[in-house]
Amino acid sequence: MKRIATLLAVLMATCALTQAQEQQSPDGTWKFMEITGSNYHGYAFPNDWEVDVTVESQDGRYTPDDTDIAKAEKLIQKNLAYLNRNHENQEGRCPIIDEHIRKYERQYVGFTDVHGYRIIWVNFIWDESLKGKLGRDIVLTEGGCGHYWHIKCNIDTEKVYGLEVNEAGDVKYLPRVKKPGPRISKPKNANNPQRIRKTGIIHTQEEKTF
Image (cartoon, rainbow, N blue to C red):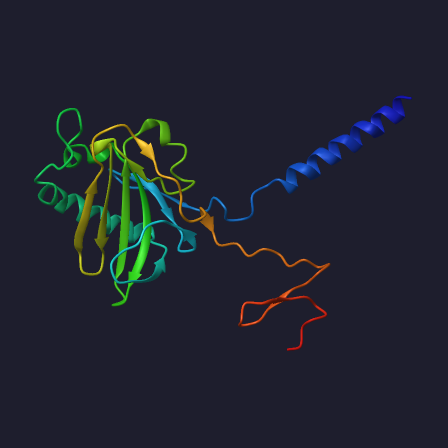
């Protein structure tokens, strides 16, 4: 009897392990690079990560490395006080962003434009409740004033531009338009393989006449 109970326990443990392995996220689903500098910390997202952000004359995406981000941070911190001279959406209890820049966690997304220049879009968030989520996906919000803002930096021309600070009001997290995460191809169905013609019509194995 004890032997049967032991075998059942081993079988149940094996099934549980198999189910846990099947529920694991695909490789690269939470693929990011944590970036730490002398006065900044954030997460860089790879070029295949779907984002709801674009830049002017965009031609593609690229993955910024720590050297690119260090340069972008230096340029932003050098130019931010001037770009923020009007303190838009930073009245009352809203922080003045250039006076508290070390308080913000960052998210970095790299783009390329038609001229071949590399542009880094940087998302700044001062919100303790989000610290554990910022490495998982881009966070876009409305409201919250100077606690949430973003800016662009062309690291080849050294131009910093496109400063946008959230308006005052309650914070609202914006729903994603694109599916978050990298573009992962779905495996083919071995039982009913399909092919797609240039017309976009899907054909079964029997219908294919390529």
